[in-house]
Image (cartoon, rainbow, N blue to C red; front, side, top):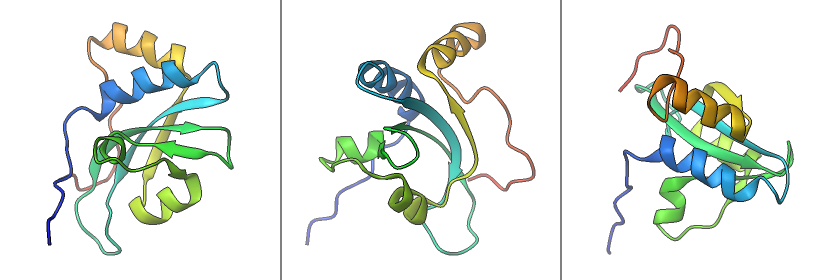
Length: 116
């Protein structure tokens, strides 16, 4: 059995750029959240992804795309990744914050959370 390694380290840049690619096709939000793909209490990981198509839409996630996986519904993504304290940004707002802060994100600290 061959295990695929999950890539990491570029999600914040990727999410801003992916939102730019998608925004002319429909409602798009860059999301910064803390995630944990587990069902128990483990440290949370800062992560960025893109919600596309409104509340009933899909999530584009850098790690999934690099591994050759398709976007999944927002509901399924939330059930699998357990995001907490999500912050949603329109594409132009995310670009502006990237320039103001000099990096792709996150731009605001999370509260009362044990980080990995």
